[in-house]
Image 1: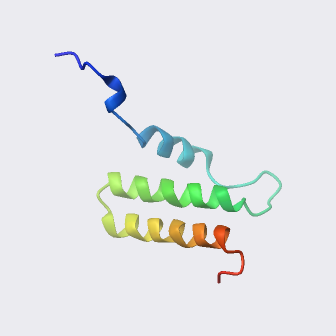
Image 2: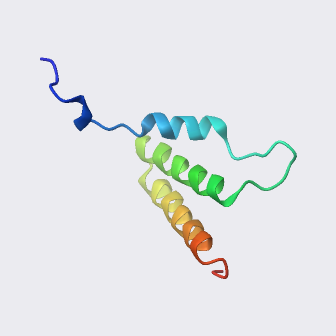
Length: 77
């Protein structure tokens, strides 16, 4: 049976796989940007979730949450 409306389907696995493949390293050894760190934490969380490692996924999502606050409030510890 063909699906009528493909717009109703969403997949973020491809995005997570690309982020994990890209990594967070910067060519000249500098620390990656804050945005890249958030993306990497989310990708690690997605990968752990899909592997069934829910505690590790939650830890990665919490790390991303903290990094987002650091972006929004630079004086945040």
